[in-house]
Image (tube, rainbow, N blue to C red; front, side, top):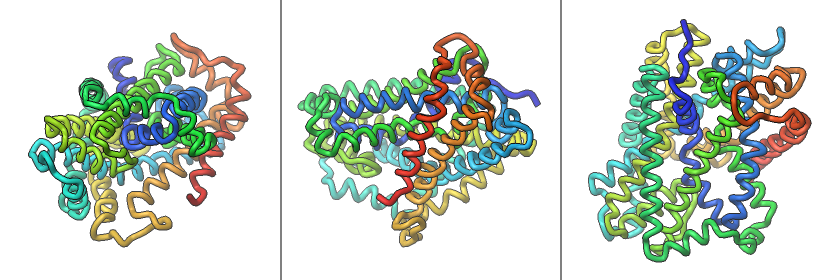
Length: 453
C-alpha cells in the first residue's frame, strides 16, 4: 500500500501546529506568564523553546521522515540490527491512547460550553455562584459529559477515516484558519474594553519585582517546563507527520514555523484573557476554573457576552479538536503499519476502543469521584500525570539519545536528515550540546515532574 503524504507544505505546518496547539496554551500559559513577571517569563520561554523545543521536535520529525513509518516501524527502520529502540514505539502508541482517554472528555467540555452560550444557558447578570454551578452540574452528569465526549470521538475518527489529505489535512486547514481569525477578533475586542491596558501591562511588561517575589529560579523552571510541554513531544505525536513530509525543506525551518504558530496562539490567548479579567475586576486563575468559571463570569457581565462567549468556546473547540484528530491519525497509522489493517477498519476499532477507554475519566467526576489512582489525584489528573510527567519527558529523552548517540541512529545521520532541503540548517558544532547539555535539561524536567509537589 502506497503511503500517503501531505498535499502541501502549508498542510503539514498547520496539522503539526494544530497538534501542538491545545488546551495548555490557553489555560496554563497566560496564567503562569502573568504570575511570573510577564515579559520576564516570556523571554525565558522563548529561549527554552529555541534551545530545547525546536531541537527535540526536529528529532521526532527526522525519525519519521527518514523512515517513512510510524513510531514502532520508524525505529525498526533506522536502529542497528539487534537493538531494541523500537520498544519505545509501543510506549508512544500507549501514550497517545492514554492522552486521548482524558483529552477527548475535556474537548467535549469545550463543545458543550459553545452550545451553552449559543442556547443562552449563560444569561446577562448571572452571579459567580450560578456560573460555577453550570460547570458543577456538567461534571456531575455522566450522561452529558459522556455524550459530548462521544461526539468528539466519533467526529474525530470520521474525519480521519477519509485519509490524510481528504480528511485530516483538509479539515485542519479550515479549523486553523478559523482559529487564527477568531483569536485575533477576540483579542481586539478585549483590547477595546475599558481598563484593558492594565491587563496587557500585567501580562506583557517585564516585572522583575513580581518575578523575584516567586523566585527567579521558579520563573526559569516554569518557562522551561512550558516550552517543553507545549509541543507534546515524546509520544510520537509529531513523528507521524514527519513520515508524511516531503524532503524539500530542512526540519529546523519547519520546526521553527510550528513553534511560532504555537507561541502566537499562547501569547494571543493571554491578550484575550488578561484585558477582559482586569476590565471586570476578576483575578485570572489557571486550569479548568479559568476556562469554565472565571471567563464565563466575565462574559455574562459583558455587553454582547453571549456572542463573545460562544466565539471563545468555538476557538477552544478548534484548538482542542485539532489535537484530537492529529493524535487519532497517529493511532490509525500505527494500526495500519503494524497490523496491516485498512484505514476504515482501524478507524472503527479505534473509535470503539477510545469510547470505552474514555469512560473512566467521564465517571471520575461523578460515579467514581471517590476513586484516586496516583496519590490524591482523580482519574483525569492521574492519566495526565502519567502522560505529562513521565511519558513526554522520558520519551523525548529516548528520541534524543537515539538521534545523537552511537548506540542509536547516530548524530551524523540525524543531522544529514534534518538538513536535507532548503532552509535553516543545524550546525555540526551543536553535537556536544545535543549529547550532553540537552539530555541533562530533559532529565531535570523528568525528575522534577516525578518528585512530590
